[in-house]
Length: 115
Image (cartoon, rainbow, N blue to C red; front, side, top):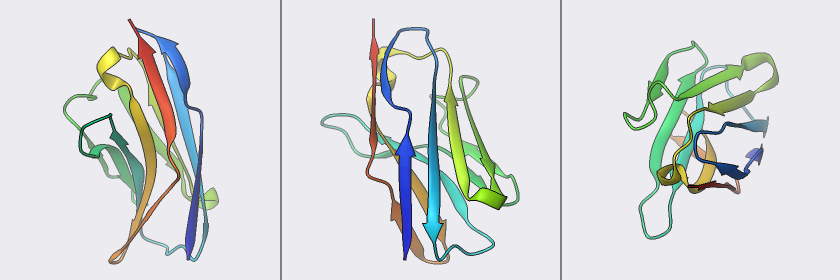
């Protein structure tokens, strides 16, 4: 079993920055994909950014150039640095770990961007 714990959400003004963090614990394989998804009220959960243990990244078009995902494999941690935040970035952000065919989710952390 794997557990993911997120930190770092909050309220920020438009144009501001936030960094989310997530630490994984449990039965973690040497190759996995960790990253972030988000879900705004009334919308489906969507990919934000992910990074493999081999440092390959994948970003949603809406956050390219503004958000940066990075990780530290030795500690099974992943971060999401968010710059230039917009009101449309308001959502609950979920940490995600994918290994093999198993997918795990954190409890979510709320990010609110005021205009």
